[in-house]
Image: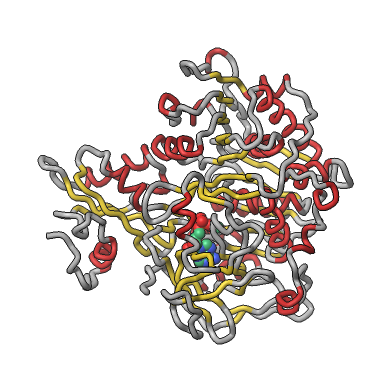
Length: 595
Ligand code: WTA
């Protein structure tokens, strides 16, 4: 068992909570004994009506009740653009979302999109992105959100594998969609750029403009009623081998989103909640759409790129009470210094959560020093669909510890034989199967799905961890080669495949290199084809090439030229050796290495 190093400091310091702390989950230990998931089912309309569709639970039932005129979505993007010269500052009530998603659903219906069909949603973080996802749910179809930084190769893999027949995008992003190679794609809706001038040439594909179609569509559309087992959303995510995998969730996942949003995010009726994640990633749907809106809570969405100024301003402007973000973001804010946050009033914040990578004590302390609140860890994965290990608002925790199993779930640490190990022993981080938001399948890949369950009764996360004597779980690293950079999951294979498309690259091996701000950065070891000489300019060009073809966040920030990329005799890249080279450590046993 070896853990891949991630930048983390351990600490024995505690974050203590006052006994009188007001939290939705008052007694964690009692809840662990008494809580049953079945009790949460009563919170949903389908419990009585037997009619299931998430859009009803997160939008319609609020729009038809007391929360009708409550703001569901505050959208702010001050960046001027062609369509919005003074930026955007908009509010949408639950009723607005019901009407807009009905219109979008009617567009989908017009183009014969039906239950179970996949709809690619490739949009920047804008209200249209949320409306598209909600409208897709309304017709019972399955959204496939695509992060806006994805380039051609990434888009081709995801839309190709999911066989999406419908795509919502912008004219600008459309340039990265290799539609001639996407045989299942039939219709495209373009947001912005209406009118003939923007009309692209799309051969046999039918394309339409969002604003025109929305203006014509009816405000009313009853959701298509589904079963709890029907598909909810597909998120593509990376493993250590092969292309990205489509993680399919089921409608029943809403039970998990609801309860974790209540107990771990501690969301309440009057909160203003800001989840900084993009719906291209699972945090942006589970906790940027489903969880908060199942509780009828107002959410803030900030468009545009990261900017420390704008982030602080957003907290002040919307009087954010609950903030859900990631360690890299906290470290980026920290890097901007102490003076900047003093310009803003951050006192509205009541609770902060963190996800995606280990929260180092230094970042925790710093955020606490500027907001008065310590960020709380939430550990989970695309595949788990919901929080599994957390620190809770009413429970003391050790700085740096990942936390404790969410009531009604059981996470533990096992050895290679699947036996739970004694305290302070490193092992595989596993979760007892059977929590509500567990993935339904890996899209069209049964073998990959089964790999997660090869230890009977457990879901194998791929992370390594240990449990201390008090029962806290401490994340240690990955057991495989998956890279986590700035909280985003990157598969080395995808990057290597992109690298070898470059004319100068003969072979490439990719690893995650520990980094103080980003947790890890993508580092590529590259051997050159004959006739190409190593130079800094070439390194830059190779990195840019990945940026242009795959995605900016997956592009290597470091490129090192090597004579030969180390491989086993069967041709597998020995990333263990690359990591040792990178750290200047002994390479260990290389008896399986090819000559
Ligand atoms: C890592 C993100 C340490 C972990 C929701 C996991 C974390 C992977 C934490 C899943 C945390 C997530 N502390 N590591 N609190 N949360 N991770 O699928 O390695 O993008 O396996 O889901 O992120 O990443 P994914």
